[in-house]
Amino acid sequence: MPIKVLDPKVVARIAAGEVVERPASVVKELVENSLDASSSQISIEVRGGGVSLIRVTDNGAGIPSGEVELAFQRYATNKISNLEDLVALVDRMLELNKRLAPIRNTSFGEREELLREIKRTDAEIDQKVYELYGLTEEERQIIDASLAKTVF
Image (cartoon, rainbow, N blue to C red; front, side, top):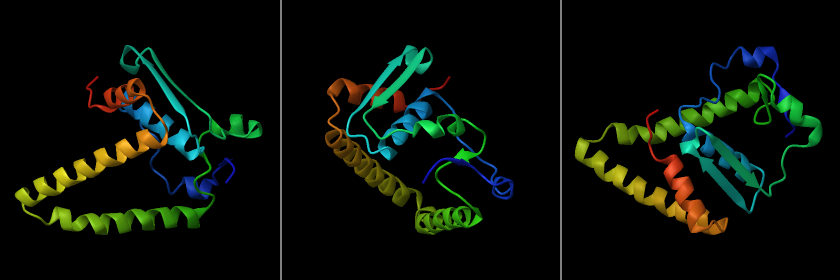
């Protein structure tokens, strides 16, 4: 889907956007963009804990040259086109919320076990992604370090 500025009627229904909480959230967003662009190689360079420099390069499809300026305009996106797309996105989020309900209704001990299982699964997924994209050990360490919780 090409990048376009959303219709004001759709914008009026949105009260969110990308929030940069720390440099790790920037790295996460840029890596997600690389994956969305069908990249098979991703390189990450971070200096000064991400305060001095964050550089993510990849071999993905990228943004068509005619859409680059548009991509930086407020409310420009390629994820949704109209109110129906927004409603579908909200519906998916509500479905996820329903699936998470059993976790909220468990005892503290059961939650701890569920969280341990989620962390194990998350680590397995990370390992498969690293292998899939052929990341070096150094690149893995940079990703892991940048995604670690840091308070600024």
